[in-house]
Length: 327
Ligand SMILES: O=C(O)CCC(=O)C(=O)O
Ligand SMILES: [Fe+2]
Image 1 (cartoon, rainbow, N blue to C red):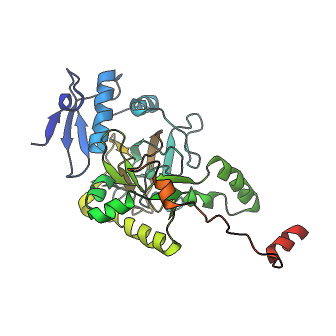
Image 2 (cartoon, rainbow, N blue to C red):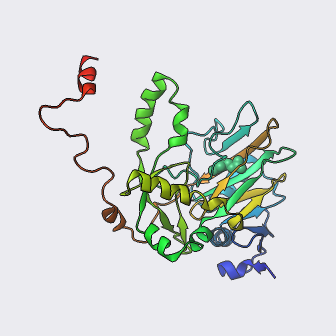
Image 3 (cartoon, rainbow, N blue to C red):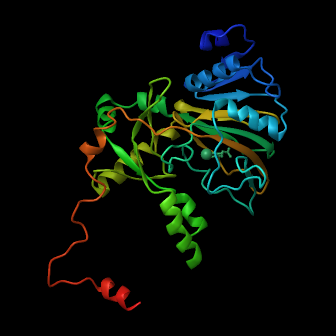
């Protein structure tokens, strides 16, 4: 029997919320709650706890207008504004992903956790589909806690000592095509400087460990040589592709999915072209990721660049120095 009553999750009573696991490692369908109505503090806590425990929550048959949808999103925390995604003009927290062959998605067909380029990456994301293609257009999730648990203990121990550098790298293309855009990029780099995050983060609620690198934002593992970092990252990027750790969501009208970015990654296959797919997304702000050895990892891994890189001895010159002086 996979159905559990919410009281077992939250200790709150009485509640009509029911949870039913839908895959071995992640995902629960939530019934017994109408999200269009105000949600009690007790039910909000039940849902937030359920998100941490099940990593992905699925709600079906929830007809909400935009304001009700945004109120529901706030159950999980404060909504944030994505610096690079398109959003409603009067509601910048509401991201609209409206894609077809003429307007392909940017970077969502790549394994990732949301907004890891931030100092405090997104805690949770809420998504619903408003235009669903006849075939395809699913969203696939992977439990990165299950992926971590499946690794060899010696490798787990090594990874727990490491930190990685994250960048808004896939979004650079938005500004890199013109000289003006490239100048703007320099300002954006000031607002979103590269961030060091632990390669394995500890979930603040469950205490479970999750692999926290993805091709969307990770640049390198700090302290490793280039080829070591690249090989290690390529190996870690295989993890979310393992079917045993996955949950595949086939979108239905009035379905809402909430996921925990601290423990999962996701991928939206672009297999529906030339059909159109339109999604509405909300994002909940998170905390700074904490590693297993936080505080010591940075010191163990060394600095981002060796101290003397770029210096040279007297009597030598670098041609770019004189080129720039002339310009
Ligand atoms: O379109 C989707 O299914 C997911 C898009 C995505 O990556 C996101 O909303 O964070
Ligand atoms: Fe995403």
